[in-house]
Image (cartoon, rainbow, N blue to C red; front, side, top):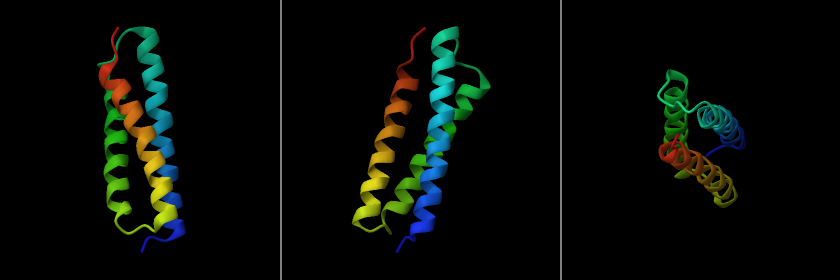
Length: 87
C-alpha cells in the first residue's frame, strides 16, 4: 500500500513537471518555436510523471487514487496541448 508520504512526494514531483511544462508551453506559444531542448525536456518530465503515477496507482487506496487521477488528467491535458501546439 502506498504511504501518504510517498503519494504526497509523487504529487509534488508531478506539480513540478506540470509547472515546467506549462511555462515551456506558454513560452513556445509566444515565441513561435517549440523544438528547443527545454520544451522537449519538459515533455519528457511529463511522460515520466505519468509513468510514475501509473506505478503508484496500483498500490494506492481509494482517496489516493482520486488525487492521482486528478493529477493524471492535468498532466495529460498539458501533454496534449504541447503535442498540438501550432505556431
